[in-house]
Length: 114
Image (cartoon, rainbow, N blue to C red; front, side):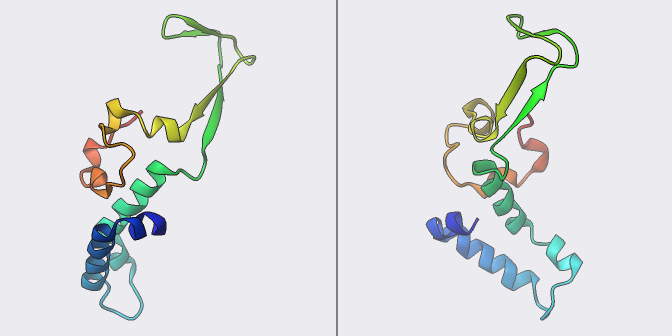
């Protein structure tokens, strides 16, 4: 997140403004931290671009066919999901998938679910 903020000074400025507005006590309270909406959006967007786990694998619980053409045998075949690739799907995230845009997470009910 720090890298993206340093590369996007306008986003950094907005984050500072939110922190200065919300964190008025020397020690932040739980409630204050929960009010840091833009900071949460920054973290979500950072993790979208560079997730902590780059991939995970799945095994079929039963023989199946994916998409009508990919047979998967129970317990034998493994499917690997590359999360950075998934999070750069233009159909889900739009043409600007490589851009750091925390505002993607402003309305959580509109965030793509794969």
